[in-house]
Length: 89
Image (cartoon, rainbow, N blue to C red; front, side):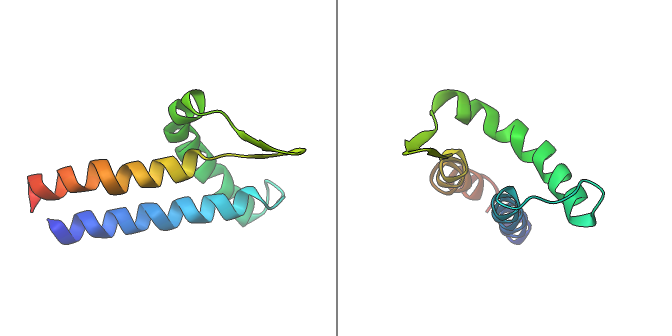
């Protein structure tokens, strides 16, 4: 069970990192990468919406920096994973 938990967390982390990279790139919705981007948007927008409502976007000049993916990863690393590893491992 521990290896399945670690594998699923690793897959989730890679998907989140891919979503962050794809958010910087403009791709047509018809392109396969655009379809992957839409799929990841539908997943991560729902997960990050409560964090975005709590933590405002950091403004740096004319640009904005969304800190919600960082908060999600830190929350998983320090709150959820230790609890789950004690429960299942």
